[in-house]
Amino acid sequence: AASFQGCVKIVEELLNNDCIEMNKATDDGRTPLYAACQNGHLDVLEKLLERREIEVNKATKNGLTPLFIACHRGHLEVAEKLLEQNEIEVNKATTDVGATPLFIACQNGHLEIVDKLLEQNEIEVNKAKNNGAAPLFIACQIGHLDIVEKLLERNEIEVNRADIDGSTPLFMACQQGHLDVVEKLLERAEIEVNKATADNGATPLNVACLDG
Image (cartoon, rainbow, N blue to C red; front, side, top):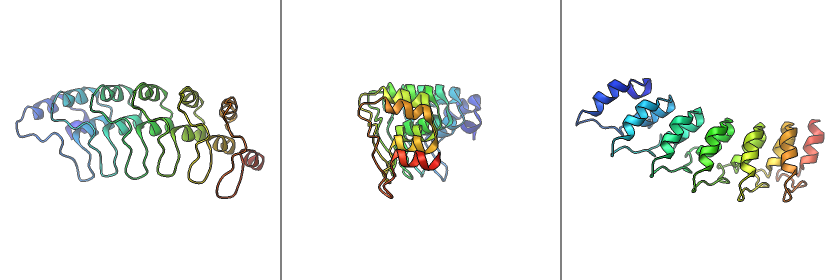
């Protein structure tokens, strides 16, 4: 509760107790570190990270890590502090749907966090959810042009990577009517403009004409 509410003085007192179990989680798997990251309490996070025993990658029952929740909520300074830890697992995905911290940051439009994640040497920019949707896919679907541009700067980006239904980033941008994203994707020499979905064979042009 002290970590969740951000009571740094109380946290300090508790950490001074030799019997404290700093990685003990709630029934759904939320540790004190996770709680601090969830609510953006940087000062509490820093106190917890001073302890050698802290488990920075310990996840909830659904596989949400402290880094994931910080990226989800858009807590930039918290995410930066976690990324400074040598043992941080930047690509660790949730166990329910397989979303990575990069995916959730792209989905929620947190450009500065996306920038920080992309600075990590071990980042996997094409790592997709269980349904095949990658970070570029979700950014195109929602229409986050600034994030799409940032992802397209990566040499290893797979611009035609489709989800399990065969929908590509271009298809999703066309379906959702994101003209600026479509224009950006069409600048790519390797773009497959006629790549169709697996379920009904619809192409980006099909869906653009259908949705008007």
